[in-house]
Length: 257
Image (cartoon, rainbow, N blue to C red; front, side, top):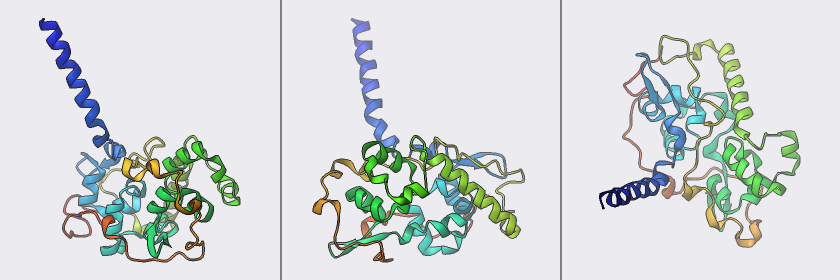
């Protein structure tokens, strides 16, 4: 009898763990993204965002591209943090197009009209390897334009080469602008966790496209949006997630040297 009760308790524990997993997995990259501070203590991306956001945005944009609530708010209040070459090539806050009389950002387009996005603005997918890997697996026909012939990716791991190239661009920039060099600690910067399996993070289920994909209004080819008609407009309120109160440029944790 006791063994049967123990078995039921174990089954309940396993079930509860599995039920909790999706909530824990919204940003699985966060448990890997991070670097050592000046006291040689490992700090995750959340800590760096609170204590030295400018260093994080410049040295590790891959930690934040999935965190739309972070970069949208921070760019509005601290545009000077976004000086790295990555942000010049990928100004995420400007990406979007009108549809149905309203402006929608690129996350909305990827969720509801991904075929149109890949046909008209394939560059919007650039920093999001998981999008491309999943979408290419389901719809390889979306990736047959000249853009993808000119910008080939490893569809099994689209992030690896992308972030390797961005690392190179950033290092070249620092070589040309040594005044921008700033390390969070006295040691040589280790590069954090910009590994191929972690770069880009993972998007939560409500942003992944879900069952809406494949049932695009208008056949997935909106007639109000065009490649030449992208505008920078106010971000929808629902995308402005709650954010910590205004903080200084380097928080109050590690000091830049």
